[in-house]
Image (cartoon, rainbow, N blue to C red; front, top):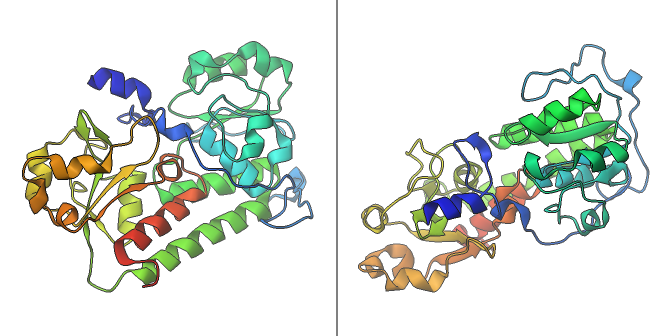
Length: 327
């Protein structure tokens, strides 16, 4: 059962994180800009390569410097989170293909498909035929396909942020690569503003204990060093398994019972969602404050399982649940 579960989940952080595979790809719809301006702007802000400081070397997560066209004008995104970022910063009109899982924003669905998320599912023939001047891909997932594309002289750039600060850096870099620097700056500023607003909801000294159930069978949660753990902390809570070094530990019902969480969250995606009514039926769990007080909820998991702008929305959602929307 566990092996089947892991096949559904995305290798979100390399070998440690072969977990969030399907959960990574499903999201709610919002509109996105097609110009390279800041959010809400009708004026394109395209930054030519020569306007960028000469000292700024764009180096990807694997340490390889970018040697392609800057700004790129024909971009293929092989990562749903990257697709979301491209549209958010205003580079949607530069995207010539995405993956079958790139469903956010709705405009991404209209783009040609280069394959699935895994490197093995990407069609080199399709990528080549679209004549991209940049392919954005995963540092953890796409080593093989990257090698094949580079042999064909197709410029590639890999990203793989592992926390909020690295997500901001990835957004900034994607803004530079696409010529949408101002758009990227505005996205980051908006994200930080939402997180600051979430912090205001948290009363000083009050940190509710949170149990996040990633899956029910096997029972899995989130340890430290994950976007979920960091989102809980930024929202003013404490992850009850945040002391564990394993990113996605398998836990026991007894361990959750021992740690007495004030809130229980699970994701709302259709593939890994835990029915929140199940918690009260587990032996002894009626004594857990979260169950006893009805403090259980399904959270928009897509916003957490992708490292895009909606990470900040997830923090706001969690803080509103923990402390009340009007507090």
